[in-house]
Image 1 (cartoon, rainbow, N blue to C red):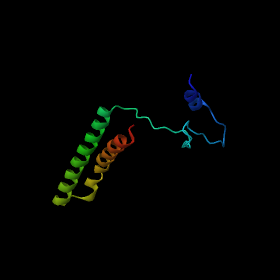
Image 2 (image 1 turned 180 degrees about the vertical axis):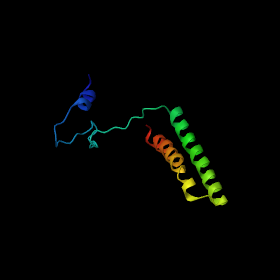
Image 3 (image 1 turned 90 degrees about the vertical axis):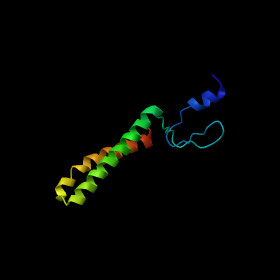
Image 4 (image 1 turned 45 degrees about the vertical axis):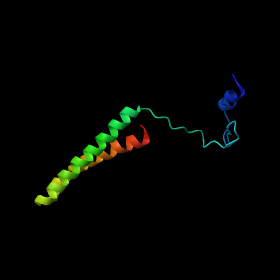
Length: 93
């Protein structure tokens, strides 16, 4: 192994700061690695946007027809699903 690899594999004890071979402070060792492919991320984004648009159209139709407010309550699940798709795309999970 090279010296750079050994420096990266070195484990520091509690309270010690870790430095990269270039001398930069490490941010606690947390690295965000995407666990889905870019294609799947795109699917989540498109699904979230479509679900948001559908929920918004239904909400507008319910408001335009003067439907009771309780009929709008199930839209919470549609908006929630849309937000989940968006945040999964953004956070690469």
